[in-house]
Length: 134
Image (cartoon, rainbow, N blue to C red; front, top):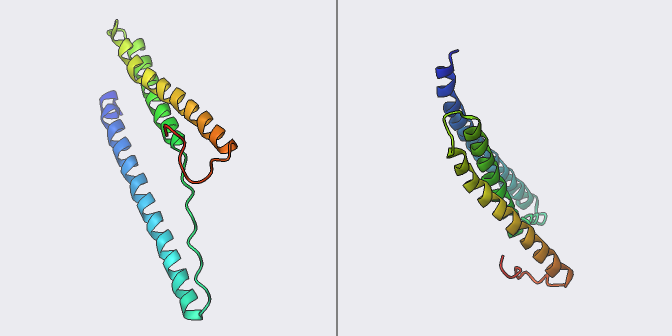
């Protein structure tokens, strides 16, 4: 394969891979709901108590910020490195610092949120209210 063909295939493979991941997750979620439904029907037919719905544990808000921060940081790092090693880009590599610093800021915010969340849990505020600022 030539370099031009590879350059065209990279985004195609990335898009198809993303679509495949989305499709597989939708199918797996549908199977899970179908199995839960069948289990409830069998329980009703046999006259036994219905199984309780499993409670989904809510993720703390800081985990979303941490994930977003890691994505932005990785994107900024990749852009910075890619533009830095390109000989034609003299000052352009600095543009990669923008998403890199956004990611760093989100990671710092997530760390502060986690400390505040943990402190409120230690103080006994477990009544379902979310910590301030989260």
